[in-house]
Length: 200
Image: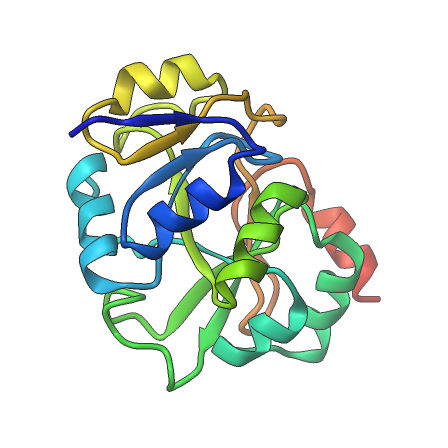
C-alpha cells in the first residue's frame, strides 16, 4: 500500500479517503491521531495496523454536543464539563445509546468521545455528517507521537494517507468517566480539580 502524503488544505482528498473506508493519520490539538469512519471493516483495519487488543474500544471524535447526544447519554454534569472544556484536550466516557452498534465499542456499554480544538478535523467531521473513530497514531504499547515524520516512519505502507504537519500538544487528552461519580481514567492537560470546579 502507498501512503499518500497530504497537507491540511487537501481537505477533499482526506475526506475522500476516509469516506472510502481508508485510514488517515493527522495532527490534532493533543497528539497525532489515526482516524477512520464508523465502519466495521475500517475499524478492524485500525486494530490490525496498531496491533491493538480488541478489548480496548477506539475513542470517537464529534463536532458538537448535538452530535454527542445522538450516540451517548449526556448528564447535566457532563454537559457543564462539555461547555467549559470542549473543544479541547478532554475525552469523556459516556453510556452509549442503543443505536450504537456493539462493534463500535467492542461490546462495551460505554463510549469515549472528544471534540478536538482543531478546525481541520472539525470540518472533516462536519463534511462527513457523522463521528470519526480516532486513536493515537502509533503502535500499541508504544509512546504517542507528535511529529508527522515519526508517524510516517512508523505507519507508512500500512495506512492510506497522512497529513504532513506536526501535532500541537505534548500529551494525550485527559480521560474522565462521567457515567456517575466523576473519575479520572487518564491524567492529561486538564486536571480533576478543574473538572470539579466546572460542575459546582
